[in-house]
Image (tube, rainbow, N blue to C red):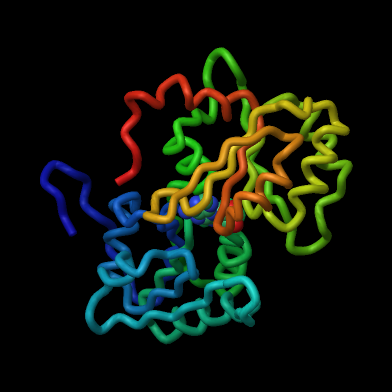
Length: 262
Ligand code: SAH
């Protein structure tokens, strides 16, 4: 792929692995580099959240390898995924590891990067638009404004290894900065309780954004104190971003002219 006036796209050498983010869902939010990678790869090792229309851009002879983790179904362990990347690269394939959002934001991209380095395999990282920032922006919720906050916390609602302790949420609440939660559903009630124990008022604005940038997008506005019960009663499901903080209430200011996602 080459675009007039643009820097040339890098070659995808045989035996190299590219760790790329595919963005939050809508194929048009792919970066140009990720698009180039999809069209150049021999093997595309992809997550469940990567849109089929992105995968359809592959070369006719390229191989798709699904390694997605989808609730309930048995999914490959991270070390098996690392192994696939190493094996394929050693066969001289151009291997694209394509993940939802950004590879290094709750995407376990670092495990893959270090596994590749341990195996002596060259790799490149292609950042992607991360779901937490895309979902909020497209819901009319700015991650920062001069008036409301000078920092923003990206946090994982559940941690794979040790379970997030309440103390961590109490500490985050004390920062007084908006919190954007990935994978929020499993422990929403405990989290909301701990954030209130940390000093965030029950009426702190919050919003839940499901399937941002897709035709299934849904936004539910709520407050910290009713977050868990509203999640239940609204039936909001995965994938979902939760944002907690003053910024979550700002969308009303722009709703009359902000064009929706389509
Ligand atoms: N690396 C990804 C995050 C992987 S963790 C990124 O940077 O975006 C998976 C979590 O991302 C989901 O549980 C959900 O919280 C969030 N997510 C991914 N895509 C989403 C979407 N389209 N809408 C809302 N949340 C999304």
